Image (tube, rainbow, N blue to C red; front, side):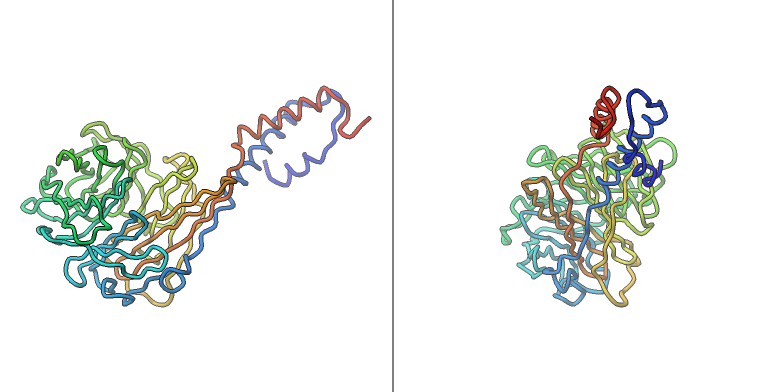
Length: 386
């Protein structure tokens, strides 16, 4: 069914009971097509021009952004952006979410161990900040630290987890959080040696190694990008393809392996806005951000992408970085705006504003509306007749 055919059919006049079944089906198909087009074609993605220079906090903008491999992750909490950096020692930097200006650095007293003592960062729904080290050996445990109130820059963090239940694998390249308070759960994707991920309960200080039977997923498939879609499903990637999974205890089930719009989209972050689900993905290749409709997580629908960086950039050879949803505003008419921040190692931070239109009726609703209109025509007289 083509859109032009739909336009033609809506202009046809019918009289009495002359409808044929195929015409009814075509008319209903038109309503579904038009509804689908309206629902996905209006999202816009533009650089957040107040942030840095036209949406880009470039390397060299401050002492914590470099062209090296020292910046690996970022998140958003309590109205600010938080960046992990090793450029000037082990640092967790608070940045103004509107401008990108440095607010200050958190107290890192007591953080130690690992290949890098500070690597990935995630935020709970209550604003608590969680920091993971990078470990590449069973001799060096994965450590998770918590800042219950990250805006208190002088307060040292609390060690909430130390361990390595999947022996000999790599952890700390990515980290995601869901929930708040005692219901907070963290996930860290495994590197070489395991195809799964580790679930951490920071309140209890315990972890569960989630593993899969068979292949895919393959080793490291959740290593460079990971996000919860809800409290029993995790989506992750190391590039090229994503793995969408469910978990129960230590048992993981692969549900789908959808490809994203670019093979270099690795850091991912999931959000619900006005009852609708979206995912942002950051490219560690050319630094673009992509937005997906996640109504069906097994089939992400690409809504668009944008780039804030310019010129020739340093290659991100590690494929590391981070992406985070920021301030979200839902308007009275149901439309919304949301800020998204993306970090690609060696290339600084890009910031974008996503504009989402007011919801349109679901295709099923539109079909019922069309059916009601058809019934009126069938049992009435010619449209426009007397």
